[in-house]
Length: 301
Image (cartoon, rainbow, N blue to C red; front, side, top):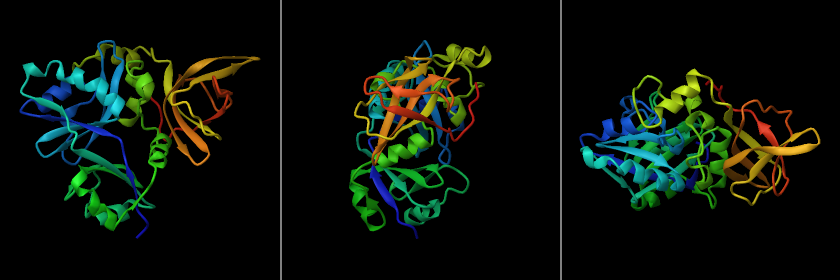
């Protein structure tokens, strides 16, 4: 069995309970929540009326509730907006502060499944004695559990002192995550949500739908999320990026997430979708050169 590395994550959970939990979440997000079940989680975006996203999240079902797994900044933006109309439905929406998220990574998924006594059976979500497990890729999973259960993990996983390698891994997978400066700035397609199955174009109405549909059917979107790497440690959490045009440098876009791995920095940034590996990119203020990495999926409008 390969070594299993464990990372304490800062992801947070919004829980939705009640008879209308599914239909309420369905009407608030870009995803067809009818396709979410105990064995299948899906990506979703939560938009304002202009189609700009408050958050992007993994949506899952666990027993009688639906979970909305997102970053702390995105939770702070989405939670009050989700609650705004809840009074008209049979749904309770709360920040489940008792939930703790742990990332596991190993050379193969089988080692993690064996340690947790689970089997995904060609799905991407399952239950275990410790809580809910969501598959990230063939090397990693997220366990949603409680702080009381964490000591059990010592028996089979090696805790890491930093979670930066975990978030570097997510960036390399092209999985979107927004910092505070990115909230309410981008439509879902600008964060590649359509490429990871986070948008249903057939589900019906939801807040911001007109903008999202216009981006798809009228070809209005000219920006996309890119993966970048710097061979240096970048201290700014959200550096503005520039592109060289002739002898001058012009604004290219903004960072929405970054993580460090040893002496390197990996970034997610929203850039013009015609940027190529030949483009010269850098951070604006520190002037750190950036290289464009290949996305692990194909973009579609």
